[in-house]
Length: 256
Image (cartoon, rainbow, N blue to C red; front, side, top):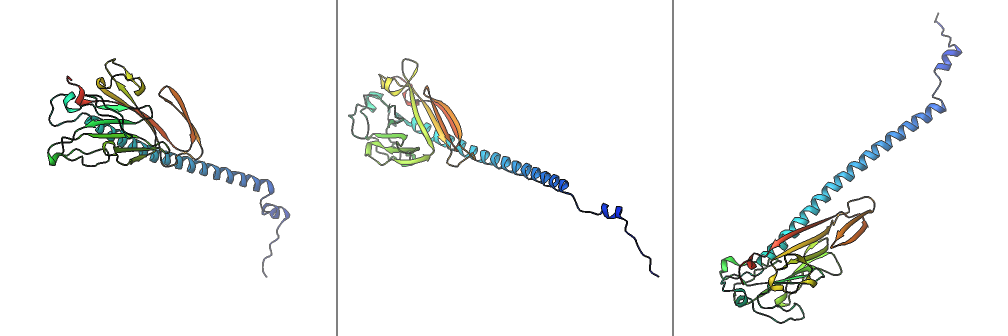
């Protein structure tokens, strides 16, 4: 005879499924966990993206400053030095470059453009390269006038051979603004419009405002910079940085 089992009502009550309250609590806990995981993922993604873009913009900053500094250090270069008046006589202006006075090495404007004069190196194996990595030749009888600036319609640093009416060669994207101040015999840095004697300029201060090419933030972020005494505010997803550097014109430190 098989034993029979009798299930009491109390036992049946204990085996019943979860109630509505328990189900709602489980869903709420699940949603909280999903929200926490999502928040952690988005935070990690934003941190990683910011690190990558920060490295990108630091590299752009270093490259731009190295390039501009290299060209400024070439201003006034000449293999056969007699004196600056002889090596760099006065030249008239043209449609593509300003006039230069006798012994003047650099010229600038308030639009962020700078022109500089030099002579090529005489030795063929020691040719000087221009800002676009072009060999300037070895004809020491000619002048070379290089121009650096930012395009009006887009944030691109460019250079060109102004003495040959050359094309503007793009060098670096993301240059939001570029400006130069000039140190003359007044012993203070001045904007180009305030310089009265370009032959006395001894150093140039470079100002750069760069933006990342890659979007950094998930939503537009307001960023404000003090640029040449004025505030400039941007509201987008790009990261920006501002940097300045003083470059002494090493070929103009001696006696005229």
